[in-house]
Image (tube, rainbow, N blue to C red; front, side, top):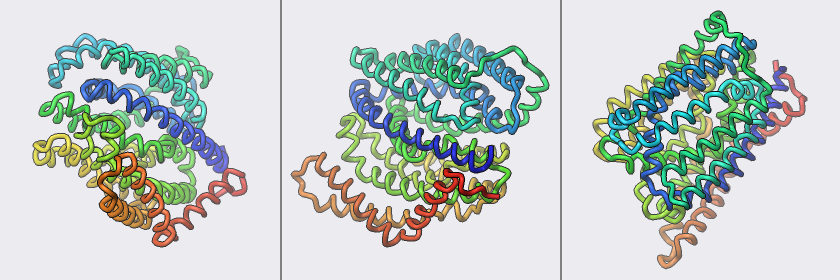
Length: 492
């Protein structure tokens, strides 16, 4: 594909993916608000700790083996068949081991209730592994619009079924059973959309050709798992399933917001950069345009939600979740880094640098071990702070590694959205002032509505004053995307 064709496909995918993200968010928010009130923190804590167990398998199967399909310039049926059967075989081994050792594993992580769901989740993991290769093929060809349809069907069934089962009193099993149904739809959809079927042309040569990239990918996923597991494991020891559930929901809400606003960019980042890696100039221009937009949206959205969350969380999901407010606010502040830094590993892997992510993750784990003894006594809020500090401390290193591998300035990555940040901080000050002067007898709904409206108006005004330069960059970026989408430009 030519450069313009790649960008055209990327733009088409972004449109589909943003439409899907926003539509599913409206539906998901409504059902989540109901389910969170019905189930409470414990079932979500059980599922989060179960994910900790399956994360070990996720280091060696799934994406660690299939990402090489997306990154390679040339791929054959032999590569695809070898990856499929290797992935399926290893997943079967992990599924059997986890199912047989469910009780000892649950005792090890200090959560006996997890043992009940591990065998069922093992079977789900086995079926889920089947979609790895066809899903990777769709992503490789930038056919994410097809994945959107599959994910939409899966999410509608999963969310609706989970809600019905929760209302019927199934507890944590409402989450497990709905996950199983969604997995079956996703697997069937990926095979149908990709038109690919597994054969038996397994080759040791193909395995060796893929191994160099897969080896580093496995290392990256292993360190990523350790990096993610340490905080949850420590919290489970001192706070149990409830504390982990609170942390999990705080992470889910903050992650959903950033995913809603920039998730589609992140999903296609590695594939687009991989297809454009021979044209560094185009990659730099693309990142400039994307970062100008993401910082202008993420900064006010995350900081704005942080200041309204003390009123919004109990209003939407109930007083039982008030303890999740502070960790949620801490996670939301990470939006300052996520607007640009969340792409770094995808960019590095897109240009074929599979070693630098290992450095970033290793450094993050080191920070976790250093800071954990200081922050663990503060419970959920302390662990959230631990995660935030680790993320901010590794940001400059990851930015420098992107500069070294892709030639995109580290300083520019960090400061590109400074105008939007100043406007967002000004917005925060104005909203807090408005909240302070609101009559005490106003309802929480009215207070939240006024805070949101004042935030939107104040940020918009400040951006046209303080952030006029960034507004101009966004307009130019929209024109740049339009030119490439229309095929009017073919960069060198």
